Length: 408
Image 1 (tube, helix red, strand yellow):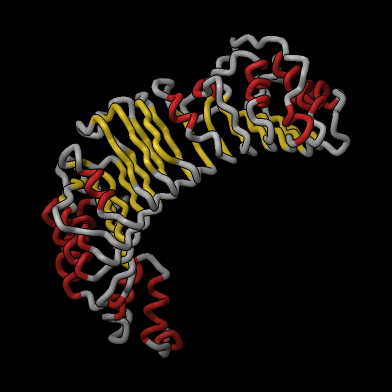
Image 2 (cartoon, rainbow, N blue to C red):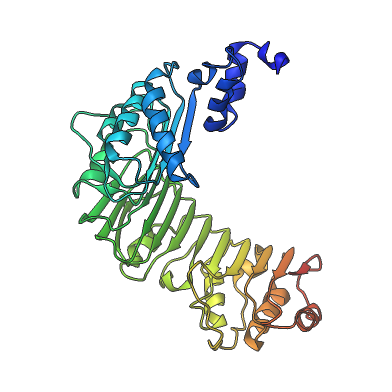
């Protein structure tokens, strides 16, 4: 400890920054030298997870007493994750005021109580680059504010003061690049518009009881989109010419406009039920498709036909989707799609039941994919005996002499 104490204050503070705030504060009892070092920490994180009632009370007293005495003029990041009823909205509001006064680059606030905490003080942080709000936080954007440096915004089940709150927040973020929203009940916003010229990544999670009915997307710089929609919104997509990757798990209503706007993607993860006739995915290289609604193997072949440059095909089951073993698959079409002849290199099947039609499709891939490098088939022993599966597929002919067949 004496050797460490001989180091400069600047180096010691850097060391303390790499450990949890609670541990860094505990070093204050080591000696006079260490007593106030933690007060210069540029990163502060307070989390009451697994705290007892008495520990939560101590944390509240500590924050009330010591935050105003913190000596760092600028705080790089301030994280507050609180669940206990010991922490009142008024307390958290004061602690956030302290954080704002130190020009943070990153703010993360999570509060899991029924009474909401106003976030109005946060929207004056000119240096703020990352803002993450979760739980009982009220998004109430005052007039004449701006977040000129904000690039990442994450909102999880927060409360909005009115139907325009989210739009007002987005409007004061001129350089926003990443937006992630879990809508919760969504209040009564009904129609939600995301119009952000600088946005590159957009993630939306919509529960079945959400108050939003329509989502308008106008994001000319967007490269990645992820939509998880349990309700079935109407999508109006104005502009996504730069889109390269999409994760689409939505219900069928109003889907045509959305699918027509993502035909430029190179990577697509989705469920077969969202596909609409008439669209061709000329740029698609990697397709990860949920097979829960894949009633026939001919539908799979049709997918391959509308993806002429496909290199990777993954068959799997999405979270909360259910693949019924009773589905009947029809015979395969005779003519293999273009991608089977000229581009398909990797084939993965993660939920293989070993039924005759499934075996036939796996064999169809092996017999027709001329450039196939790897085919990986995964199953559970209670679906199909692995030894039997290995024998069946290993004995089939292969169009690619270099194809490696892997069983998981």
